[in-house]
Length: 139
Image 1 (cartoon, rainbow, N blue to C red):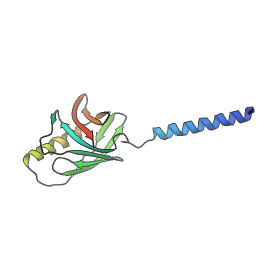
Image 2 (tube, one colour; image 1 turned 180 degrees about the vertical axis):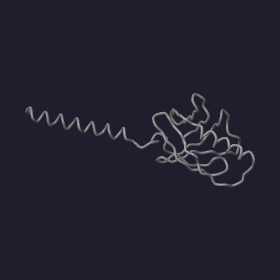
Image 3 (cartoon, helix red, strand yellow; image 1 turned 135 degrees about the vertical axis):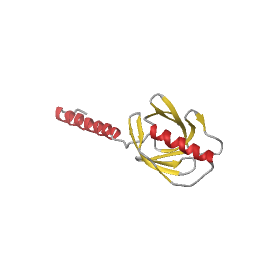
Image 4 (cartoon, rainbow, N blue to C red; image 1 turned 90 degrees about the vertical axis):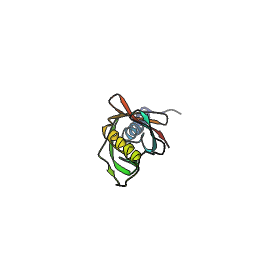
């Protein structure tokens, strides 16, 4: 089948527009798409969590929520490339064992300090500068 010059030009233009639309769609993916889902914190400020402590990160859209050790929390985050920051979080106000309250205090302070992240497979690592302060596994 022979194609004339006008047909070839039209086909080329259609292909270019289709590829351009796909690239634009990929670039405008929602913030936090790579982070989306549920994560179980496994270490905090260089140490494993104490037995019985559960800290989670649940990313959805531009919000994060979960268990801070004792209380539930929620807040917003901003992710641009590898940069990641968290807005102040709202917490419920239950009293728990002192050990869990200490975990919660450490978690909320660490979360507020985070400024970047990286991921490898199902492991999320949160940093302040070059210092690893939190690690989590996808649930």
